[in-house]
Length: 328
Picture 1 (cartoon, rainbow, N blue to C red):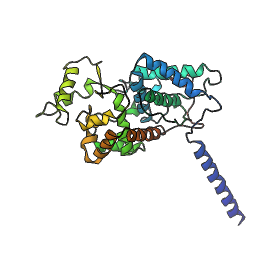
Picture 2: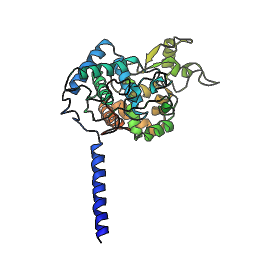
Picture 3: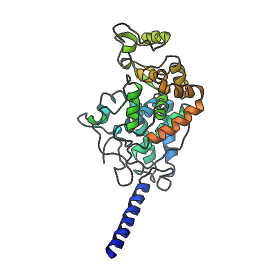
Picture 4: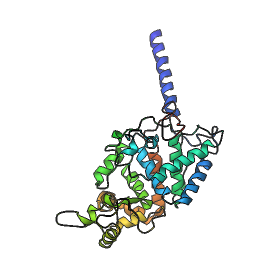
């Protein structure tokens, strides 16, 4: 009987310990309230200054956050550099990430560390999450509270990127499978795709749709014909590979629901964009977001909040980097 009582007490203590560890490992609002109370103001000021210098700050920071979270979780591993070019950022799927996104985090980190109370208290992963919220707001998108408490990862490998990011030729099943793997629903996926409203792409990512779609068709028949001709004009054969064009040709510098209206008109730049409107399983959601900016904004905030929780390191995991580009 005594042995049984001891086992019951021990089991209860273990359950309590596990419960405590689980609850303490969750991201929270106001995580830096006591250690760096003005962290959001410091990040916002740095991001705003960078944004005033170049609009590219917005789409590049947002894309950086997405690429970070989908590979090894939201742990700022995308920011790490490798002396032999073997980090995540060196993978072909990441090599096109604009430098302005990285610079945004560097500037925000410097602003935070300029405050003695905050120096080396805020993770690079949290800085990226906050900067992403701020660029969305600066371009007219929704403002939302950001959950904080992430720690920075110490590992970044080029191999870990393989098959972790969606490709521009994905169909709906492939998109849903990849997002589901990260705990995101089809609605989350469609809402997050709406970030292309301020995105840009290099011509090589979609040129097959306007020049060599199939043996019988030069142009993808799901493309709006006039839009396809405009794309050809912007991306002629043998175009400079550095040339990039806006993914939303109507309101390219405004975070709005125009992306979904474009899909309704056959103006999705990637196959993975247009399929959202063409597949019966996702069409109704696209139409909803096209007709209601509020519905899109609400869904986007829910989706990006969920995305910000992917594979996070908290508590004693990871570290708070002194330099976002290298481990301590």
